[in-house]
Image 1 (spheres, one colour):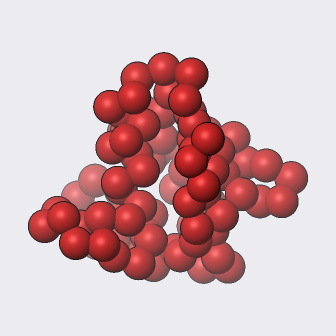
Image 2 (image 1 turned 90 degrees about the vertical axis):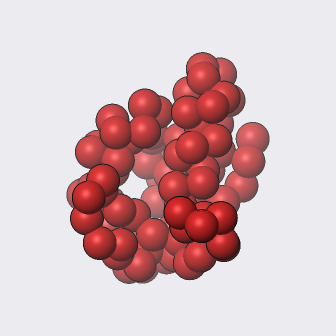
Length: 83
């Protein structure tokens, strides 16, 4: 199983995590330091989840966000650490 940890800033919308994880086909765990570790046995799904936070539909790097499919983006911010 592969994973990466996301360190969100104070505007991150934790309440959207279950829907986001389900839509991307990954699992998540909120750590004691409020970082979020996303995991999957499927590298492609995990890469898609990683890209969801940092790349827009044109392949340009963006500020991190937590968006639900079909919704406008919501700034979230943070840092990703791959495992």
